[in-house]
Image 1 (tube, rainbow, N blue to C red):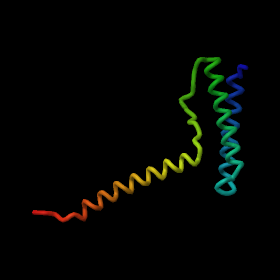
Image 2 (cartoon, one colour):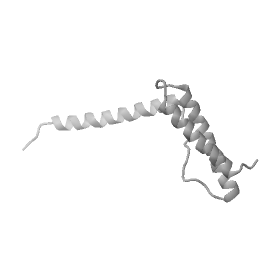
Image 3 (cartoon, rainbow, N blue to C red):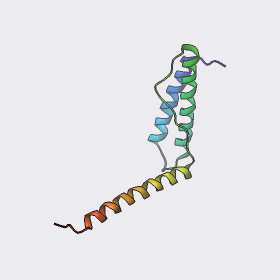
Amino acid sequence: MTVDPRAALDRLIAALEAHYHAVESRHGEDDPAVDDAYDVLADAFEVYDDALGTVFGEATPFYLGEEEDESEEDEDDDDADDESDEDWSAEDEDDEAPVSR
């Protein structure tokens, strides 16, 4: 099904507005309204981008990354923290070594 790019753009603009309002009136860090608005916005963007490509052979300069499992993100963050701690420890050991003259 081909979507009219103008209609898709109107939907994208409405989704941007709705996302902004959800963020602006957020009720706590895990407000489901913000998550819902995010999902609607992502979907509207994909529909618009596809419509541009189908009808005009054009694309937007944006890319929606794939969502990772939160547990994978936490593990990646922990690994990065561990590496930076190791680097810091190695630097500390060098600073504490006696200087020979």
